[in-house]
Amino acid sequence: MKALFVLTKREFASYFTTPVAWIFLMIFVSLSGLLTFYAGDFFGRGQADLQSFFLFHPWLYVFLIPAVSMRMWAEERRSGTIEMLMTLPVSTGELVLGKFFAAWAFVGVALFLTLPMWLTVNYLGTPDNGVILMSYLASFLIAGTFLSVGSCVSACTKSQIIAFVSAMMACLMLTFLGSDALINLFSGVATEKVMKLFQSFGFLIHFLSLTRGVLDVRDLLFFISFSGVFLFATVIVLDHKKAV
Image (cartoon, rainbow, N blue to C red):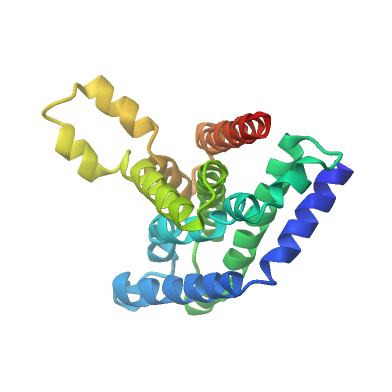
């Protein structure tokens, strides 16, 4: 656990030494506000809540999370420093978790910077703060799951560009998997059971369930288990490449 903490701390600090990190923070906070107040018609709705704010988070993450995850392993492989990492007295799993937790904590910082939005709605009205808190949890969980996908993709290539595009497409597909648009598209082709199965694997249905303020263990287990599968896949990919 001590080695994992040291790795996470080191990787977390490294994010703030690159301009990409600061650009990510500025873009995320700026787009979150703009989409909420303009596309989400925050004032026109006349409701003191952050529903329109969190509604755009999955779609922002589809494009922004790959920008964070693309350098996790692709840059290490391109620069050749991955060989040095693999010689450290830690397991591959600890390396993967260290980088993942660091990236997840960095996204947590981005979410923390949006807290003035929460203060604003409390100033304007009396929102359900329990629902807002659950929505922040949902946003943090879906961001972590996207990061696990990006970590696995990044481990498969030396190119950050390929890692970015591939992770973005994978996250986009997983987000659309449970969307109403996809359900309506295949409703006349696939059976109802098949459509429900596809919908259960979609990120949106679990994300929206949490943003309604409903703490369902199944939603938590979905994001945690999905992240676990992709992190385990990352370990397998790295061990395979090390053996080769």
